[in-house]
Image (cartoon, rainbow, N blue to C red; front, side, top):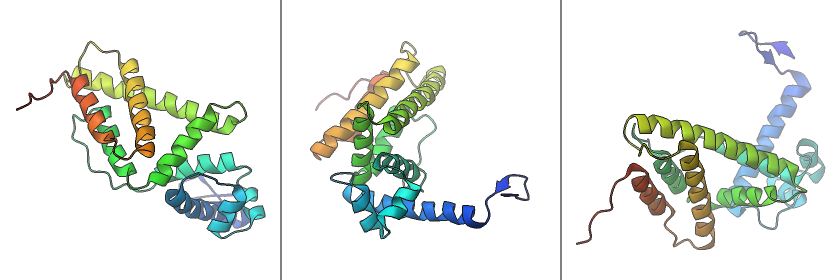
Length: 207
């Protein structure tokens, strides 16, 4: 390791090549999972599709569980085509727009659902840590957004921000699972309805 011009450590030599190779494998694995999801998957099968040996894959990712977590994390840091949110957008609206984008990559939606299901089992500590920390972070971030929107009058002030956050996450994840099983489920419309409820907006009267 050496220092970069800004003083931060910089990887060199074999270490830098190892990081680059791991990222290259992740990028290829994202494409594989986006196409096929996590069904009937093994490290050996993924290695074959990515185009590397099983030994090379296990060198960088010790288990299928670790690979699934890292693939999902890396996929979330890719550039997104989601449309811009208005300044007063609620977390439910943001989830709705995210759901619309996710419909284009159902394999990664299925991968996420697989990780959450794995997290409920005692013998999957990596998935459990990933899901637990993710939910805690989302609850905190969404609760902060709710407080701000309550202050500006965009969300009902009588609602507990932390409970609202938990409800939005539960609605989004639950609708996502329903959509995976039945693509006629309108994930976005249901979240938009939740958004109206949180804002205290009555539904439009039927003609």
